[in-house]
Length: 54
Image (cartoon, rainbow, N blue to C red; front, side):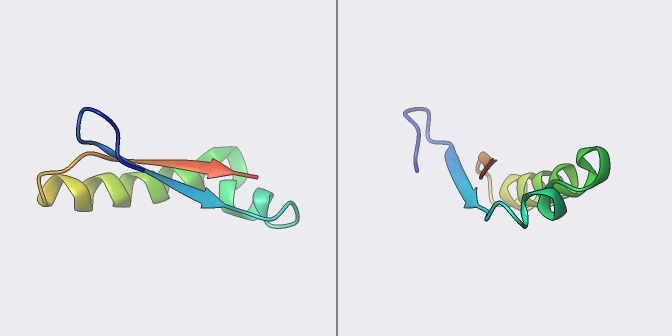
């Protein structure tokens, strides 16, 4: 979904059984996913955010 300011919001839909695996211990996996996505977006001159939805 594209926001008014031109940024993109990606929504990652995760099943209940897999939610804990995607988030990871202490949120480390989710943080790593967001870091990789933001890094790639920055190289392209874009702003991208990741929302994890259960």
